[in-house]
Length: 443
Ligand code: NAD
View 1 (tube, rainbow, N blue to C red):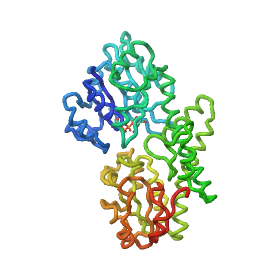
View 2 (view 1 turned 90 degrees about the horizontal axis):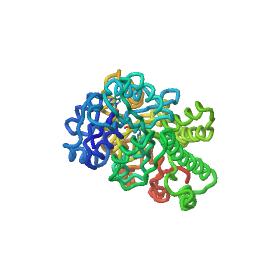
View 3 (view 1 turned 180 degrees about the horizontal axis):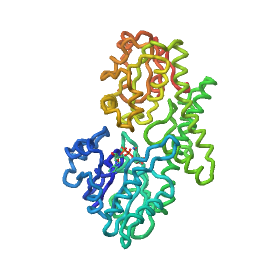
View 4 (view 1 turned 180 degrees about the vertical axis):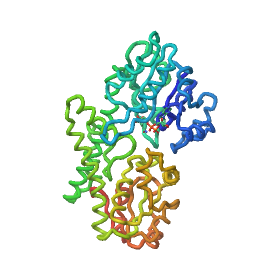
């Protein structure tokens, strides 16, 4: 089949490469010139394991363009995968979706199926439909469907090739036929729903996962107060099949480009619909407090933070990605900067991205806040160099390379031997035996 994808970020590019690998002819549309230049040279503009190889391999069936008009011409199935970031109000910013819908409408000549791949509030398909009706020729038929994406950055290809389920929110049998043809070679359960249900499924799923994280973090805090061990407690509850063992790792809180904004969005959507989703508001509060608790632990051991050297390992919001959108590290850096600490940071993949962001012109407003946070922070390419003269080492991302420690080097480099582990990756007894002051979460 011919397929067009508008927006070539994490979701759009992974989906494009996946469909090309499955034998479809894919045209990806990207309006960021720098990204497009890289993509046309077959360079993936962000780090995602295996994606570069897949994009290189599928040169014939995966093409790139900046023009939505070409995307509309190329295929009957048009996936929209542009960003829906949070506004200051907590609502998702629908500017990019609105722009794409308008642009598609202006270029419509015959039937097209517009498929929401981006995470959008319930009723978005109706809004897209209304705006497209306004700007498209009166006699042209089109429909809007929803096919939410559940991939996880860092293991996006594995998730995209082997999804737990494929959700298709469809307005008609014609739309259903097109989408089931797109996915005909996938071995996964198909959940065929109405469009509103599909839109809700995505927000409900992400909010549930965020709730699980906040729940286990709250239990971890109780463990700290009662001399229990959250790892043992999580195992004890996770083996109950009704609960499940995934997403029960206590830590510094959830982050990333999805959970914080999707929980925010779901709270706002619910309020607009007339329901006060207080449970999710508490999920957000626990997540905010979790980062503050970590900073308190640093203060407890260092007493004075001003002029202390604090080494941080981990800038990305999780391992195997260079994405640092809404990463817990950013809030912790901000807090430590306010206390005038000197920060030295290492991350296996995100340092390069951080440097690129620091070099962007001041008017790139979507990265302005990130840039400000990263200013006056020392960025290191070497894990142990980042601990030079450090009074404390903090672990904020559970990268595999952090999991074994060279104690000799650390002892020699660090000024004080204090480790605060926001991801529970070390054995407390081992670290204490090696002479470190060690605190983690919930044990
Ligand atoms: P992203 O910011 O990485 O990518 C969006 C891309 O769309 C950017 O490259 C941007 O330049 C491009 N774009 C914006 N307007 C455009 C236009 N008019 N024409 C062409 N390109 C345009 O975002 P993402 O992380 O890929 O997320 C996309 C959507 O998918 C969001 O709604 C997100 O919530 C959802 N989602 C993301 C993930 C994830 O892990 N990142 C997982 C599931 C769902």
